[in-house]
Amino acid sequence: DQQVKQNSPSLSVQEGRISILNCDYTNSMFDYFLWYKKYPAEGPTFLISISSIKDKNEDGRFTVFLNKSAKHLSLHIVPSQPGDSAVYFCAARGSTGGGADGLTFGKGTHLIIQP
Amino acid sequence: DAGVIQSPRHEVTEMGQEVTLRCKPISGHNSLFWYRQTMMRGLELLIYFNNNVPIDDSGMPEDRFSAKMPNASFSTLKIQPSEPRDSAVYFCASSFLRLDTQYFGPGTRLTVL
Image (cartoon, rainbow over all chains, first blue to last red):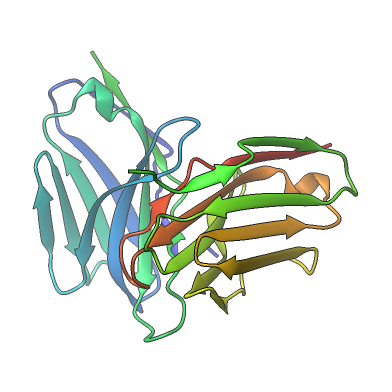
C-alpha cells in the first residue's frame, strides 16, 4: 500500500526545456514534502521542500507546487540541463509531535535530459 | 565538511552469516535514520534514533534485524542471520533536529548469496 506514488518510472526531456515530475500521496496526515535527487552509487541529496501551508516554493531553476485538495505535488525544472539527469524521489512526512519523523518515499522517476 | 559516512560500501556474504553495517552521522546532528532500498519496495524507513534513543523501529522487517546507537557519532545495523532477500542498498541519514532536512550517506550495497 504505497502512500507516496510516482507513476512515471522514467521521463525524457530535451535540454533547455521544462521537466515536470509528478507525485501523488494518499495520507492526509502528511504535511511536509521533499524532493531528493539521486545519482548512481550515491545517496539521495536534498533538492527542495514545501510545507503544506504553502502551494509553491521556488529555488533557482527548481519549483515545487503543492495541490492539497488533489493530494498532488510536482517538481518543475526550468531550463533542464544535462546534469539534471538523475533519479528524483518524492518524499513526505507527517507532523505527529513525537512519532514518525522518517520520510515516506515514492519509487522514483528517472529523468533523462537529451542534448 | 564530512557528510554522513557509511562502511563498508559493498558487502558480499553468504546466507546465515552475520552482517554489520556502520554509520557515522554528520557531527552535531541529533537524529539518525536507517533506510533500505530495494527494487520491489523502493526506499523504506527501517528505524530512527533521536539523541541516541530509538524512537520508531516499526519498519524493521524481522527480529533478525537490530540497530544500536551507542553514542552520538556512531550507529550500527546488524542482520543475524542474513538471508538472500536482505540483499539491498542500506542508507543511513542524519538531521540536526528531528524534523530538519535529512542528509544521506552513500549507502552500503549488501549482497547475500
